[in-house]
Length: 617
Image (tube, rainbow, N blue to C red; front, side, top):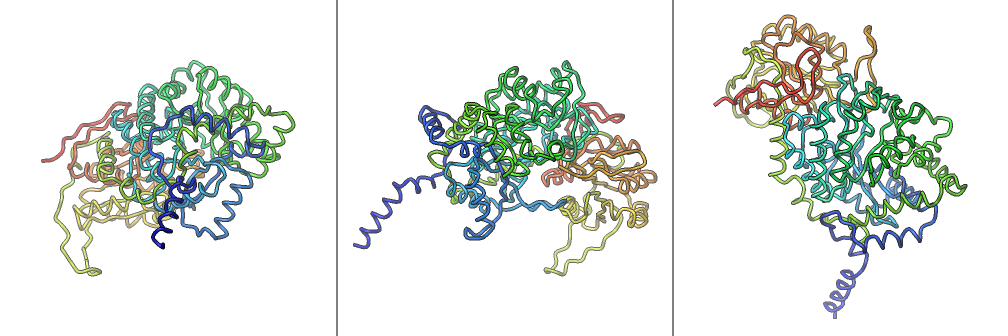
């Protein structure tokens, strides 16, 4: 009787709707007639408040939380109170530290949210260098500009495909990538290496390839930041950026990658908080009907989801300080479908519901966007199975062949811009002697001096680089410095540099959202330039030892324009750990160096240049 009872209980669970939710929904994205009927039927049953809630996307952080904890209760209650339709998954960020978490914890939290939501949720994330942007144990890739340096569209396609496989396995359906901006402005503080390059044709081809790969794995994609954020010198997280080109310039440079993305089937387009006087001299793009509806929807014939950039960014919030809820209304009226990260969800919700009920926003216009969102959800199969199978994560995420593919892309991106024939290749000088744990002692010498410049010496920047170099040269002297320490360390660093046979300077400078710019006598410095304190130290090193020094840009490739005296210059276009490993391989001649600049470095080198150096046999 016990066995029989257990059998019928198990059978009932298998047939129940709740258990059906546990089935992992595989690929591909596809909207069929059954799904359309579900979306239409669901829409008819929704109140105005429920419809408005579908427009909002708010943050959730990938971390373990007890289901009965106050933290989870607050998140769940917010979701249900405002009928939230989407979440953007991120991790804890306390500048300059980002605390990546684990895939299982992320998937478990997302499954719980899905189970506690009345309607299936769309889950998005910023996976600009793959899922490793936020989670450990996943496949790591270099930045988009590194893919541009390889010139290989098949790499962009694999990048999208692998990211899609891992994201969907964790329960994330939508990536806010690829960046379709053309980084034509070397002073751009926020796009930079996030772009594939400065050539609109190449950017468009790589954007399209990424979209094809991601869609093949069932991942929704986003072309951003419309109508183009590449030719700006302001971070829109901090202020209002302006795109100054005329319409002819926009048609030839900024818009072509977005047109290619639309032709490739991109699922969504993200609108930037920029002003574009050639298109609308009065409004920010996010709240401009001329840009969102007339240009993107009508002229470019984009049928998919239009999503705002984060509404809590200063580039927009400063304009609505006296009525922050109005921001959401104006963005929706401009033609956006999804309202990303409103700075005050309650104010945004009240303003939107009020605008619909007063007739300012026709309910038919609201229905149009909500139906589009519901159809996207059903095209992912979320109306049938909204949670993922946790037991599948250890086979779907971090597959060895995918990890190797990410490393290969980083290897092929390494670009040698200048060389004097003195520094490369570095020579291996032996291996560390074996020792018992806690008893390894290696004498440090200055034959090879490695200096790591970063924003903060407590960051991970340079750690993989150091380990890889010391595996080849155990007595290498590795010194870390940052803007706070550069002045204090100057004398010691210069003494070590004078004694060194060869010097490797690794500069970690990458675009960072909301990073404050430093004021100097020469004006306001770009946030991806080396801070003045560190720049002064590097100049002193080059003044006395340029011929024996290799400067490596572990991120911003435009660094060299501030140091024209550098005789040896190498770019990885990325600070990812795979790029650190690639840089060391290049230094020791383990790989052929054959990348080519996807951007022009003023006064240094033109796009397409790159010295080919064979691997050492």
